[in-house]
Length: 223
Ligand code: SF4
Ligand code: SF4
Image (cartoon, protein in one colour):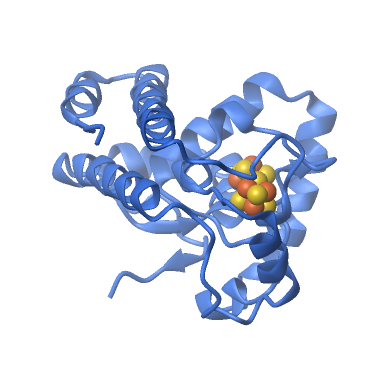
């Protein structure tokens, strides 16, 4: 089975000073994560139903970390037109209005479409968070069943167990690296955290000061 090491990430974070350097560290860890994913798929001959334009799963709650959100926010500012950013901010406001009154369980049992999904495609594919990079299915019918029965949390996912376990382990190692270096490792919900990052530059300053980055986003408790 392929190995995943976070030593490079720890070194990259420790040497970072500018937003670009921090983003480079995240980008490099994403590349290592994707390589691990591809290696296991090839080694095990895993057959997936996933493909471009398949987006039933983009209505699940997406959990992210602050460093992923800042990478995403800068990617959006760099690559989206002014009109696209203003349309996204509107979708994010609508998303936050729906999500913020909900508990994590309530959110997980409703189909709330990701505000970054556009015309059936991820509008930030290259910068999507690890939670989305890990997600996969060997059976689209299982994804459709979950979409049609969002409150059935007992229905088994159709992921490859070894692949899912290895990627989850790699995600944990990644976040442990940030935690070890004193950075915020709160689990945030994607849309509400992104809205805050795009509206509030102080969120970056808080993150750099090793404080909780987002004060209004939906959070997944860890205990
Ligand atoms: S996880 Fe399911 S819905 Fe998502 S891309 Fe794969 S097959 Fe399609
Ligand atoms: S970030 Fe992209 S891949 Fe992830 S849920 Fe949103 S649209 Fe789907």
